[in-house]
Image (tube, rainbow, N blue to C red; front, side, top):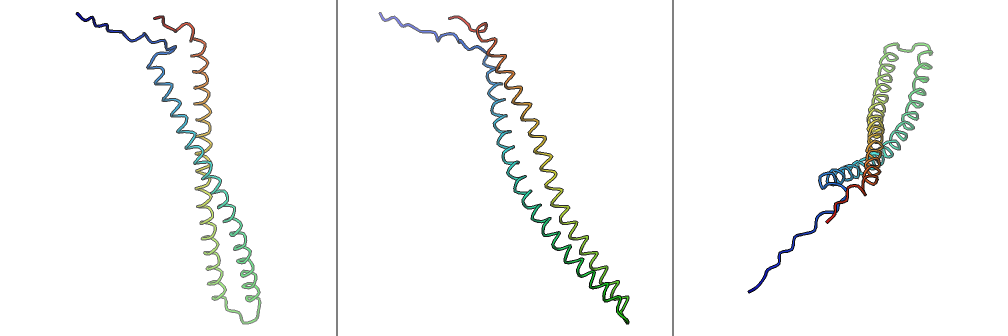
Length: 151
């Protein structure tokens, strides 16, 4: 005769329930994912900042050149026999170019500002999640001795 001994697995000695542990792990993963997204966004903002600054410098140079051409246009208008139609057409073209230049810079700036706002909101959210996670950690650590189950 053979006797089979079936051994039961030991009871769990976890300090927190399995469900609570799963929630905690999901929170940690969510926080890790949010941190990665925040880092990606920070890098994007830094790249865009460089791009906006370079575009702004180029814009200033372009505007200086446009002002020089406007000054020349005014000087031509002051000469005897100048044509007012040519002056008006030239001025209109210059103003259209200025509007175009300003519009392009404002578009870049709008994208940059939107990403800055996203980064600020994500940063705030991360701080809240980290604080909640730290609060959960301290709560779990305080309850740990009372929740241990005996075998």
